Image 1 (cartoon, rainbow, N blue to C red):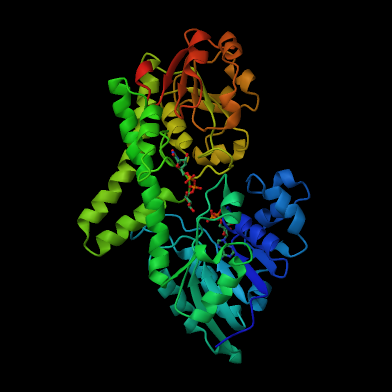
Image 2 (image 1 turned 90 degrees about the vertical axis):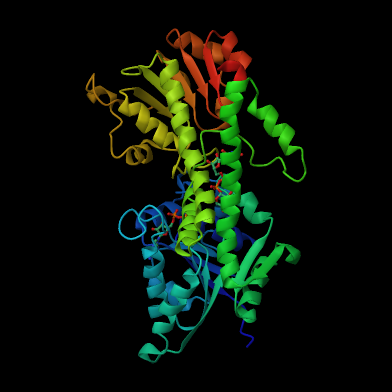
Length: 473
Ligand code: UDX
Ligand code: ADP
């Protein structure tokens, strides 16, 4: 059956995926009306803030698009019911973190938010609605969505029908706008050709149709998990080799370059670092492992689980090196953490390696000064289990404490060490002589991203360690 083209879109979830994705669709499709709804009212308020510096998500290029489309054909609102009712298509873009308790704790995704919003769709949708999975979900979640939606058909004498599509998002934070505007591919999984074509028609407004792949529902759901697992696997592979470089005198950047020149391997995603963070990689691999174990595929599960083990080991390895270089004692030492977001150009700290490294250093009694261009003290406090950033209150011999410092050079004053954890551009141009003059002596610089010029640091009289660099071990 050929239905009218989609006109009104509702996106449930105004987060790091929902917000930027809908902004770009609104920008590319002025004929569509897009309503991004969220039960978190303060998030909606922040999206509607007149001061575009205060949007809840930081992404290069995002505020310019928001300025163009907001209040024209893109609206952020808490009126969930009304917008479900009038939508022709609804994107589910809610959070799907790993369960922290109960069956599958630490392994399976918590689908309570997907279930809750699907129940709302089932209850309030009217006429025909295309329901689109945008959040990354375990394989066969569409089955659950379908069951919930079908349970309310023809209730209250309101005619309703649903088509279900999987349309996973491949954007990476920090480059979200570019990735959305110039995607490598758009993936649409579904069973009904008409619904697939309607969604396809939206993307065709700016994406070459050859790049729009259509599959069955389950291939689409699984492909998203597999793509992330492959990417994460490359990082664990290169990080495992970074340790070997440090022992053998090789340089990981030279090895990455030499290996990546092979066109079969490719140069991207071969940068050693403190381990991958972000909301997706760990969760998606855990989902893959859970799924494999469920189907009795032990070897497949063990293989992918190792990617996560290496990622954890890399962080542990790095903080052990830091403590050892500081004579095995960091109690009351002033250590500067440069960067708290999980990668540059985002204010997202979910699964950031900075969290685990900071927690470990605090457990050894360090006084941390944390700097980040986009992350704020409140986010850091939450991630450090509510330890308040108040160095004044520190008990001298016990657990460490931390303080947020916006001014990098102020933070260098009397510091014993600085650790670069995020590859923000501003850390690449630090004046090391100036930093050295302010720091204690001896003082160490630990570059977990291998982004600074080693000679500049060393010639400023500072001790230096950088990931995967066998010359500085
Ligand atoms: C990832 C996928 O790239 C994206 O397609 C998917 O939609 C969501 O998950 P994201 O987590 O936002 O995106 O960022 P990404 O650029 O993939 O980086 C993930 C982590 O890997 C970061 O912590 C990053 O610093 C790290 N990384 C990445 C490396 O350590 N080395 C690299 O070479 C690349
Ligand atoms: P992502 O990175 O996948 O976008 P986020 O956690 O940044 O994830 O965003 C998910 C958003 O979904 C949150 O702002 C949360 O409040 C919202 N959300 C979750 N469940 C519901 C629901 N039932 N109705 C409306 N919004 C929801």
